[in-house]
Length: 103
Image (cartoon, rainbow, N blue to C red):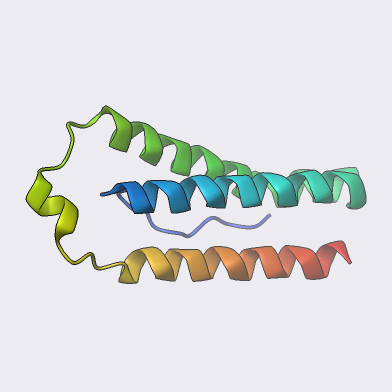
């Protein structure tokens, strides 16, 4: 079983929202490919962490969408994406590991 160790990230703007939505789509595509190519038991074990990541990201989207809009000033402030980019890199590494296992 793969452990999901990506820390929770709070979506703070529409750019981060869109990136998170694209990450969910990418993981879903990967899971569909794995479902077609990986033996059933192995798929069940491998997919668990990815499904947990999707659930976590969907909750982040829900939290962002239910909050009041940011002020105009906040919209144009410089955004520190260091943690978010680190999370993206970790996710990419997970996907690459899954590709190696699937091939």
